[in-house]
Length: 265
Ligand code: DGL
Image (cartoon, rainbow, N blue to C red; front, side, top):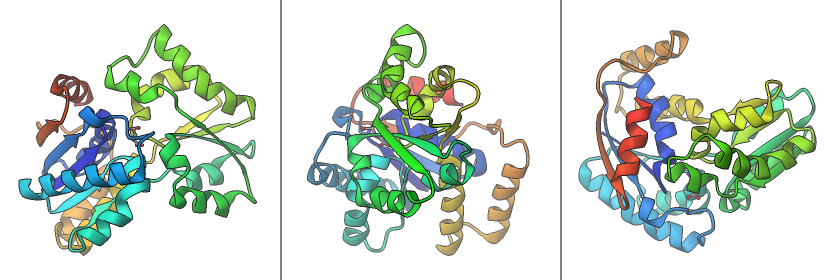
């Protein structure tokens, strides 16, 4: 069983990509919506929540855990790996590398939470690419709240998104990295404001592929199953027709999670 968690419903954008490749697996998804957002919380607070959620997922039978949250990864993944040394954790990081390799204007924009942007992992990656490209960043102010309330399009969503995205576009960014798992739910609005010439990058697909690799290493997936999973990328990579075997759990209002999930599948 694969355990996945996020500060809220955003992690479903990662579940979606994993499920497309591994439709026969069993999943337990935990949304910590009662404590969302994590973006402005201290590392200690996030570590405490992540620890509690990890224990909950392990009790549920999770054999591997996907931290489907950039902010939680930045604040807590090292802590979790040390505390639960026998458990494999897969984390998230803003996709600076593919953005830097693909930009034509030489400017990439990163949208993420304050916690992610000050995380040492992100700062290290940024430092490695800064000689080649200009990296501009902005906190997606109010984005998480929009997604948690299900307001993904329309005038209010556009106003909120524009306030954080426009400064990056004004700097010349032709590639926008979605550094928070909530943000892909706003992709339509982001693309509308950014315009056709701007590429939007979501790392969820890469995380799904990395999960397969680690599952093979951990003998949670056979080579044959992994080959089949990766072949789905080469195919249409569409949502599987079968209903997913997933238990959805929220620490807050579960109706938002259910609704977001229904729209996903
Ligand atoms: N989904 C989380 C992330 O990927 C952040 C949302 C929050 O601030 O709680 O960073």
